Image (cartoon, rainbow, N blue to C red; front, side, top):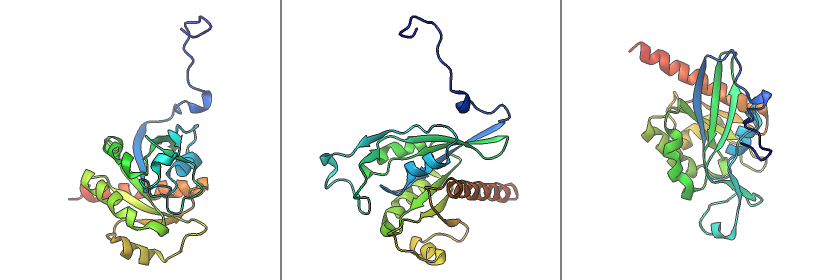
Length: 206
């Protein structure tokens, strides 16, 4: 019962309802260090109003959280971001953005559960953070692609050089993106889906 005494529970907004043509759905996680653009990516590409769990950053995080390159950031994800995008008439992706601060990484295992694949967002100013992120995905058996978010003040390197610096196997895709742009974020997700498709084909032949 609502506050007006009605027994009717409001349903989802029209624009948030799952398309009737949907026949398959997949869970995708978007991971990376603090401030690499996970919340921005979910927000830019989601076709529904994204759910965020951002909280205002406080003095308690000083000396604990690594906010290099994010000095103007005033809020941070403390649980997850959630969005949804339809990539074909039949297939929908549910997007889960993970918290970037290391003190919240204990939540990652739950978010990884049931994930079909992942996008690892990388900031060229802090490449070292990516190693533990990718390590956790490998431990969980979650296939992933790497997306280099191009910050205006971040150094630019050839993708082959970044592949070497990140010690990425040749089969794992690495692409550049601007997560502020919907088309760019969608291209990253399509790269992941093509990669997952190729993995499925390879496994079916072995």
